[in-house]
Length: 124
Image (cartoon, rainbow, N blue to C red; front, side, top):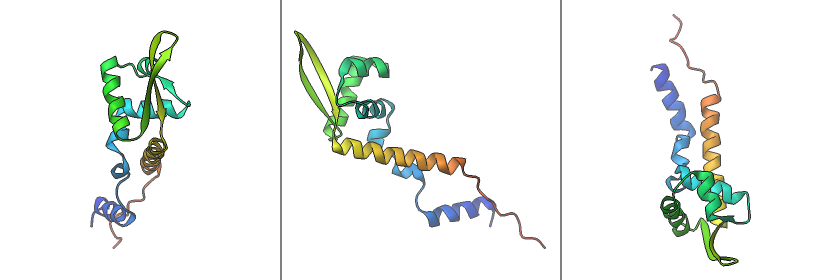
């Protein structure tokens, strides 16, 4: 058995690779940005998200729709004075999904930063 085979066997015994816990809905760059920014505030305005994430109106709108349909955010439309505004807030489900994503990322980083002992060939 090679050293790589030994590592693969250890991984099989310890469970799935940490990347298996990443959520495709959350992990996308813009959506992860929306969730993390929304976590920092009670609600966040569309134009702030657009500027912080460096995306177009249409691109951000599409990502917000995906997150809203997944139950991770709520979108509220209203007015600030006479100007229409859109606010985004994180839901409990969104907070839980973000927490799970962060745990998976921490596990992945830990895996890469932890030195692995690869057994050499037997003496003899």
